[in-house]
Length: 122
Image (cartoon, rainbow, N blue to C red):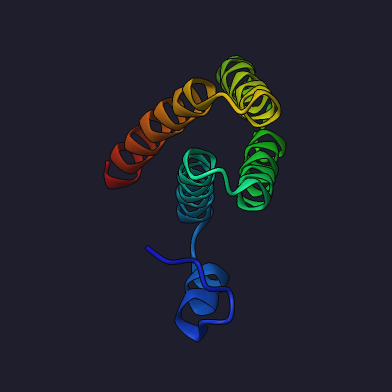
């Protein structure tokens, strides 16, 4: 799925989506930016690496900030730890040009996406 913010369909989708769907869109956007950054790292396009992984970091931070600790404190604490770990992996992978750390973040966020899709379907 593309994320062209100038696309009227995408804008409408975001503006009318329920909170759980918005979270899924964030996760999918994070995955897209991580994969773009990973691919750019392999081709030594460091400007794209920086741009993509910066976007991925911002999305992971938004996932952290969107947690509702007052609703499910224990679950949010665990998710926050996972997201902070992903954030660190993205930062380290970007700084060290380490594709394995980026791959680890992709794997974790992809698992989060699969879990979120199952939750929405239920």
